[in-house]
Length: 77
Ligand SMILES: [Zn+2]
Image 1 (cartoon, rainbow, N blue to C red):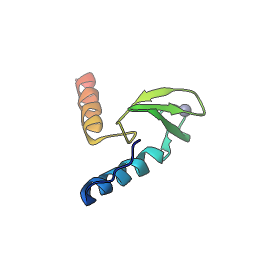
Image 2 (image 1 turned 180 degrees about the horizontal axis):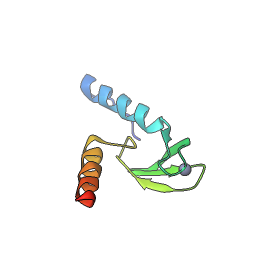
Image 3 (image 1 turned 45 degrees about the horizontal axis):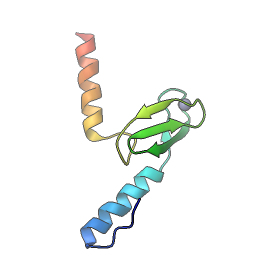
């Protein structure tokens, strides 16, 4: 990722994005904390090699959780 130089609020957003993309997440497949960001929105488990589409800078997003809930509610009815 390119550096962010201009504006305090932009720098704040930038550091939050970097922090969350370097965090490891739990794999929904094998439940190990082995999910790493491969590229934008692409996340891969180092343990079971499963690949997931997530948010650009974090594994789950608010919008993603809402749509997952809607899908599961639709599948139940
Ligand atoms: Zn896994």
